[in-house]
Amino acid sequence: MVYMGSKAKIADYIVPVIQSHIVVSGSRTYIEPFCGGCNVIDKVKAVNRIAADKNEYLIALFKHLQSGGKLPDEISKEEYEKVRENKESFPEWYVGAVGFLASYNGRFFDGGYAGIGYERGRKRDYFREKRNNILNQIRRGGIAGIDFMAKDYREFRPKGCVVYCDPPYDETKEYGIAKTFDRIEFWQIMRDWSRDNTVLISEQKAPEDFMAVWEKEIDRTLQAKEHFRATEKLFVWGNSGKFV
Image (tube, rainbow, N blue to C red; front, side, top):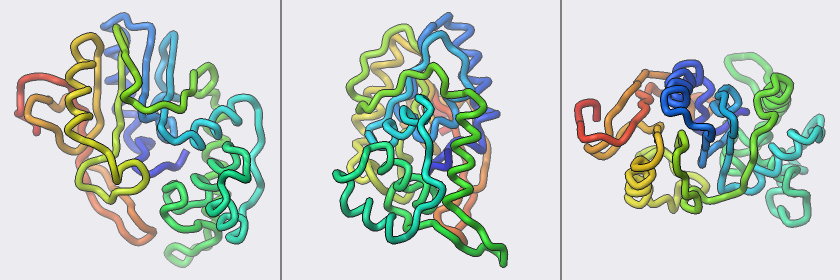
């Protein structure tokens, strides 16, 4: 699914890294506490897969689709505004569908309405593109069997698991939970989890006691005409600042 900070572009690179740690560790359980658009976990193989996110509407949307639920064919700007202002009046899955699929760049009611638009002279139906994207994800079967949870990452107490964390990035445009995200607390929890689990973290930079085990420069998008290059890295806890 299209999602702000999505790992869809680099999933083919980082999934093998994650998968190798699952094999080497012998872990039966794989956890993503910041599952977002599920563009990584839908490709990972493990006996138990847990996808969690603090946004209950996102989780409700995936549960709805996992159980065979349908999506609306279109969302007008009027409907978008109505749902944004009256979330409590609609089913949670529907709020999730409108908020993530009809907002530009998947930024849950924070990126502006993405209906019909034009890019480089070409007409685009942004909602339908994102709708088709998530439906194709469902058809591929990647989310079948995933245990979805609406849960704050701090509630987890993993042991003997492989954990992949894709938190809100530091020094990037803040939206949603990123506006109040405590990064000092996050990195300490990553240290604590790493004592009893294999923990991999996506970020562009990390504290000096974390080591990058993979990195790649990619193109990022904030708005339709705003692109920039960024180096994605995958960190593990260690005592080397070589790649930071």
